[in-house]
Every structure is written in structure tokens, then in C-alpha cells.
Amino acid sequence: MRKNDKRAISAIVSTVLVLMLTFGILAFVGPKIITMVKDNLDGSTVCSQVATSVSIVKSDLYTCYDNNTTTLKVQIRRDPSEINITGIKIFASKDGSDITPANVTSAPGSGETKVFTINMSKPDKVAIMPIVMSGEQERECSKTDYVEIASC
Image 1 (cartoon, rainbow, N blue to C red):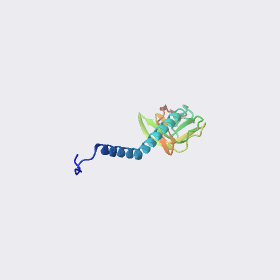
Image 2 (cartoon, rainbow, N blue to C red):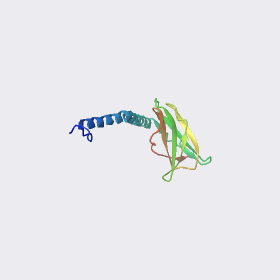
Image 3 (cartoon, rainbow, N blue to C red):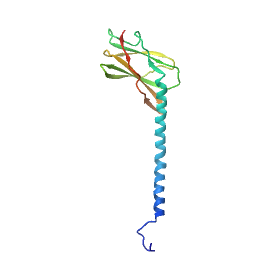
Image 4 (cartoon, rainbow, N blue to C red):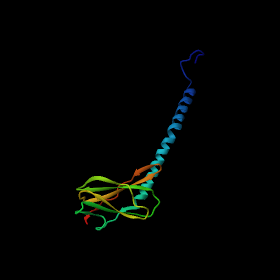
């Protein structure tokens, strides 16, 4: 390279610049990615724990449809646990398609069993979806298996 030739950058300088740029981007984006992955893993863990602790009680007396009052009654049992369940969505199904879910704001407390009543047309089956707190945000977990609905 000639003394006065300023057209080229040394290979070492360009390598150092590329490395500095890469580490700068990682320093900025890295913590955000780590937080996002951690939140998703925490949410999955909570949902897998709640899947075994909340269930529909199969009962012709408390999980049934009352034709006289056109109300669906769903009895939900929660095992004793410290998981923060903030609510439950109830999904009713008729002829294989979901009817609009009903948001239930109050989930049963730890170790409690509650009966929820919803005015609606007669469904064939019903399932629930627990809503839990995962870190700073609410997370909807997977639906449970459907339970057949009998008449009260």
C-alpha cells in the first residue's frame, strides 16, 4: 500500500469494526430476547401445572343444561395450589363447533369447587380454559378436554 493511498481500510480495522458492531447489537437486543424467552418458559410451566389442578366435575346435578331456564351449569373444581388463576373461560360446543366463550372473572379459590351458570342455548359439550398470571402478564392456557352435557 502506498503512503498517500487512502482508498482502502486495513483488514484488521474492518474486522474490529464488524465485531464492535455485532457486540453492540447483541448488547442492545440480547436482554430483550432473554426476557422474552424466560417469560414464555415460565408461562408454559405455569400452564402445565394448572392443567392438572383445574377440572370440570362430571355431574348430572351440577354440570348440566336446564331446559326450563335455558341455563348451562358448569361445576369446576380446583385442587389446592399456589398458582394465581385470575379467571376461566368456558367454551360450549354444539354439533362440533364452539359457541362464543363466556368469560368468568372469578375462578374457584385454591381447594374450592364452584358452579357457574350461563344463559345460552343448549350445548352438547363444554370445556374450560384457565387464565393465569405469568410474571407481569395474564396468560391463557390450553383448553381442557370437552365434557358431555346432560339435562338437569
